[in-house]
Image (cartoon, rainbow over all chains, first blue to last red; front, side, top):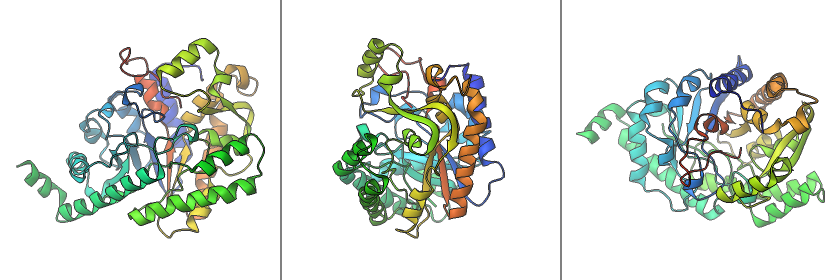
Length: 177
Length: 217
């Protein structure tokens, strides 16, 4: 609804607002979540574009974690975020809430391996791209489907912890070799 | 390492959807509503703990949406359908169809007066989940930029806030108070949702027929 100014001043305004809220508040983890829409199962109706134009602003937000979509190709290449923002935690979106079928463990592992090229394993959190029922009026899925997806995500995390317990860099290197 | 959590919201039961509607229409007290919503939060938390997640959310079960629910908690706000706030109804209907949104399903919080926190936004949500699990809890709050962008409209807000940026101090105060209160109550993680940032940089770039050019948030 709001009157639009140019993108640069809008982003600067958003960063200032967030930083004023969290300034000096210790003892709690803070994060920011960004997505491209979550009201329909149709991929084509949501926004598309990588994080590149947001990176300068995201790097100035003083929160510990950025919770970002990466399961959808609409979010672009991971390196855009990895190269610039690996000094904090990433809530890595590795599942689509718009598709009921649970992603395979290897699909999830593939997303995590890309993140491991830039992030320490302890700074990688795993989550779906967005909520499973953002708007009560147009929920994306069912309790059962969401439960199955979260079970799969936990299974994937277990596999990944075993795989990378001995050091992420070495294992990623081996996988690439 | 690789801690598993959710972004926030979870599907609501038919019973809860009916209760949300009754509550919106003023046909149900908060206490009656909470008894029904509590059941859904229990179901959502049980699904997460059975799956084995590391950080738990309450599924935003009590909320109409991740942002519109603030009208239940903030003075100076009113819940309105997107149809009520649209300037050009005909163009708006066409836009909804293109974006695959059923009419009447997305409501927004609208600023209609001076903003202040009548009740905490999510401290009660946190306390209820804390009673169900010892795992760390994440609470999602609408981000400040999202709130301002969603709530400010000239028709309804100009009297209290001539420009959107004039809402900054009040919105920052509300969210900062909430963050501190959640921390003091023992909440481990607060996530601010700022989905409209993508709209700022990506809207209007989409090819016709390929992708929609806004986020509805």
